Image (cartoon, rainbow, N blue to C red; front, side, top):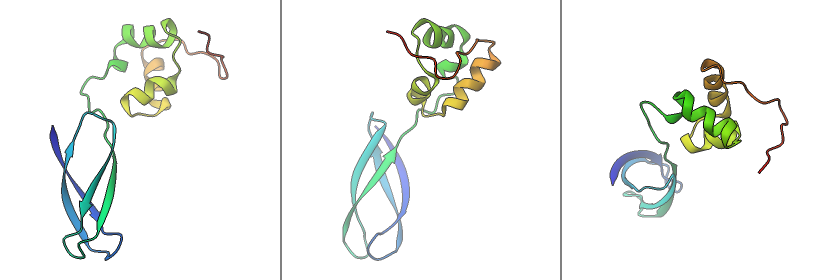
Length: 108
């Protein structure tokens, strides 16, 4: 498991502190911490994104299969990587993969 430093302000005393947080495998995490000044407890909510050098959506074969073959939406693909649907739209256009019209109904 990796360790991340999170800097946050205490909700009670207003002091700013850094905390070493252990990142697990999950994308969203909540971890308890204790303020060293006022000794009150609080929770830090984190969203951990996959930081990939060459994410799958850069691969034309993979992206075409997900978008057309599996009929996934741009939003669905984007959620897997912690990016916006517009990022997926940009890559579809960049890779010359035709996009569906807006409001296209997903069929199973």
